[in-house]
Image (cartoon, rainbow, N blue to C red):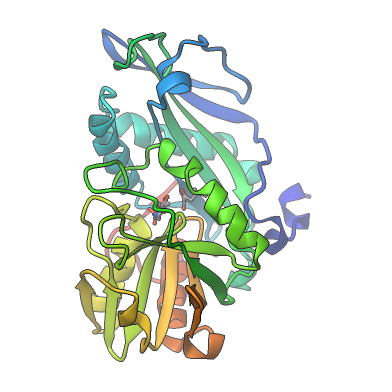
Length: 345
Ligand code: PLP
Ligand code: COI
């Protein structure tokens, strides 16, 4: 029997669990070259590697899903390919060709097919195979300048929901003293260095009983940006709001899919705009979105001494409706009207 059948995904969360195969491509002065699949394992790089000294690196995250029909699906991998391509430009990495990215995620999924968690009717308990493409400046540099060579690796790991609560409300804390991104910085790309800066405030918030930080903008300390490594949404009546992509916010694939579904499937009015803390005082529902977070409802937000409780700390009906449609598309249950799914063959 497939050992993936015996795992309780909801409890596993995002714990590292190695799978058998990874995909490698390299880039020298001659450009990008596919090395192909190899056994998952350590790689050797110079201590002077650009990524180790100056953080020249980007990562991606997407999932392979078991369909109800026994196919394995990827969800909009082209979008992740475009995002890493753009991120490469920002970090002076030779842009990774889109077709190499798409080849990598398909081959790694196929090679690690036995680790794709099985389809389960209870969508909240569902697991997926998380694919982690990363690109690093691996050539040696001493001065602050782009590395002379690069390595792109994609590995895979079976996961459950990032917030182990699944579709239950999380409690967030607004940070007054820490920011995730700054105007002109790298918040709009998945630079590896964006993530370690959040570890200290997130740990402090977790120690106080919150699940994550809700970050405000660095300029006015007033406008909502992101929920840790997930996008923020709130709902008022038939209106769905999310912060506009001003360079400090990661353009989430889930974010763009939710905006599309809300507008075209549920007839909602959607707004990408600045959202202040005061704006959420009277919202009906709020949630975080991302590949890892899927859609995680937000039950309360602590701001200074005040607790903003949203929808009685219960998951909202509109959030649930969007969540269900998104999962149904990802798991091959509903029609793929927008061509978002691809079968891994
Ligand atoms: N925001 C940040 C900072 C992230 O790291 C992620 C995860 O990739 C997201 C939002 C959600 O993006 P996506 O929906 O593409 O996973
Ligand atoms: C994702 O949703 O794929 C992310 O990148 C979040 C990750 C940092 C755990």
